[in-house]
Image 1 (cartoon, rainbow, N blue to C red):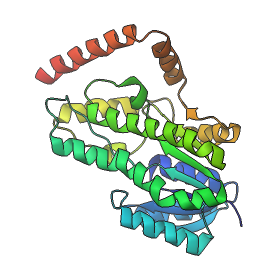
Image 2 (image 1 turned 90 degrees about the vertical axis):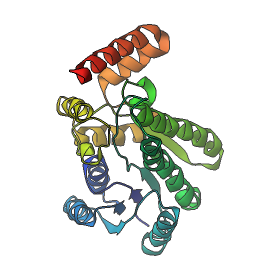
Image 3 (image 1 turned 90 degrees about the horizontal axis):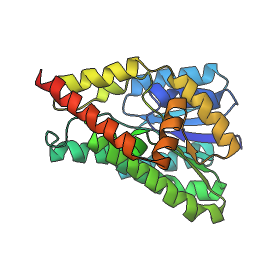
Length: 268
């Protein structure tokens, strides 16, 4: 059987670019997203790159939909070799402004969506002795101000990935976690936050990014081939993480200063 990959959130952004990158190697892609129109476009691009596959509308918050998708992968592709849990949503706001509903929504998609994806597809991945790629964020490692619910969800994805990596190594399954910094994407389409200023600030970060989703997909492809566990595609992100590991206090001071500036700006 040819190599087979499943990608959540494949309708746009990084998910689409990952699908296209592996399609270039002739892979079969099982693609899911909430937006079927965007999925159809991704499948068209995948075929243009030399891959093939099928699409399915799927909400990663719903375990029954993910289980049905796994069954469809079994029926149509005979299994899965690489699982990519990429679907995610953006949010921001200071802790006192975030509602518990904001927390529930963020955790249900960005953390539990990954947990459920791993759970639904693990039997297939164990059988193929394949790979799991979970998409987290530099926010999981650096915890910037004004996005605590996003930081916590993504940190959970890193902890889950570490847990799976050590549990599954002896069973022939490899695990990778991708932690991109902000990059040019349509993540803001899903943005939820208490203030329009916060959305504007995040938008500025995304636009100012020197790296595209396609660049990240290429870096991911190379690093997975090399067997790297934690994959940090941004050079500045790698430097910041190394600095935090050595001595976190200067980073905390900078983040606290940033939080003060954000508050002052929000007050106008």
